Image 1 (cartoon, rainbow, N blue to C red):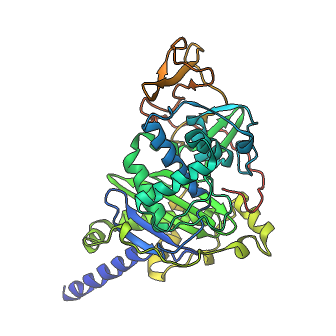
Image 2: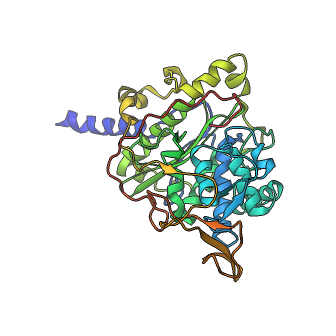
Length: 422
């Protein structure tokens, strides 16, 4: 009995240590509570880093604000300019002169990471990309993202485009709290364009139980980035992982962070009773990390291939204290596996959609706000349309529950230039 009493505190101490331990990733990370913003785990979360395509979370935030303010309707039509069409991959690839709804542009932005759609949205909201970038930076400052500076709306390489894990966690919090009606955009598993299926680059979706968004990114300088959220019961967490070595690594590191947060339970809640808010993490004034040589230097072809083929993570790419990692290593495969699809593929397309009877539904400026109008309304404009909610979405944009559906296999993505986004 006495031995038992002496042993129990030791076991509790070891378990608590294991729960608090976190993967020693290649770059910064932070794990926070979505309800409170309290920090659970972090490493170098204030260190400057190139955001790559997680930039597009700010692009969507500014676009959502424009919709809320009535400057656009979520299904307004936007014209694809020659400048937008010329944006480097990854892209939707629609030709200049065609139109796309705000709704479809955001879906392609989140799932395909379409850089051309980022420019389409920027021009649709602010008139020009440069004017939109000014709005992005003003919004970042208003949110308290003090390390963040944007130079473009998509995250393609720019030495001056920087952020931090802290700042991206703050942005994710703002999106979740301020725009809950648009959550579905961040967790669509698959888009369909004609006969093509496009699988979300976020490998947590439909693979890690409870994963519900948000965005991935890759350029040579940043390595593989991920801003992700997940829920279990009434608890929701946000993880930001920057500078991973490949797409599997960033997903597995985020999954392990989520496991720390979800499995900790009341013991960790007690220990973190006085935990600081993510906004209290200090951003560090220094040059951003740069992984270009490691990602795309001598082994650039191998690295680019890894990003496409999804090579399995090597054990030495993620290191954690032995006591903390042993159990998760033994059950790593159980952390992520193919789950029943959470929704059917969502169709996207150019041009206006039509209602159930095949009639276009028009959006026009009425009393200073973009509203749905009848086609013969005096304010109706020729090139301004409205698309009905697609299959899988409810009236507020939420995903309708679906019975398990086996999707067709998606053909592997073609290899990209090492500096492209994923």
